[in-house]
Length: 239
Ligand code: SF4
Image 1: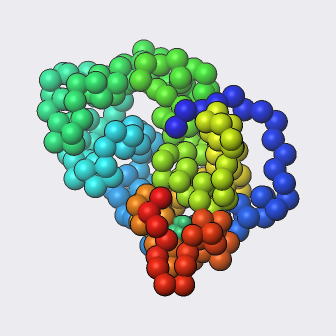
Image 2 (image 1 turned 180 degrees about the vertical axis):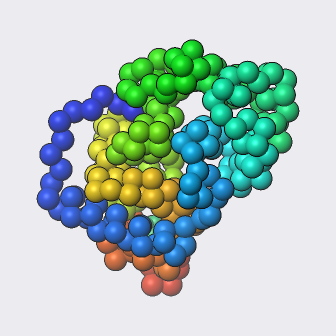
């Protein structure tokens, strides 16, 4: 999701309290119900997690999971990826529905990093100057490689925040800025990757785009959407 200019933000105490509550709920849900993917295994190197996050932007987690181990085995480092033949990279990515463009992006990123002696840029501005690196990937790399507190605001997290907090912003730009601010509140306080992954999984499995599972959702007592949409006899309509 496009990142808009950050403005000084003083969230209302009620918003902070709700974000804190949501964060606790998501972390506890993730411990019992979060999805297990190879790039989330303990001990994965930052390179391995970053590659997964880049692939995940353009295809499904299930698809990446199928091809991931083979890909990492064949290209175990930025250096090997930088030297990859484009045709070989393409044939690795094609089963995921990813084509030449993604192969190019991955290789160019690896080459840029290798040109810096294997040094991954540590600032958002430098990262976003690299071809193929947008705001989401920059946030993912900063969080994964440097342990920064960065929100990975994808469509799943945005939908969850939208529904939980209620209508956000009157224009597209204002909405995007408010979503980033709420997402930042969510990841503050440690366990950055876990909270990002929990919001992503919760959006994919519970707060789904169509037919969110409100009746069985542990957030429903505090959720704006559930409070306004659930009726005693029916599930919430798809959103
Ligand atoms: S109650 Fe419904 S809309 Fe609210 S977070 Fe849960 S699934 Fe999403």
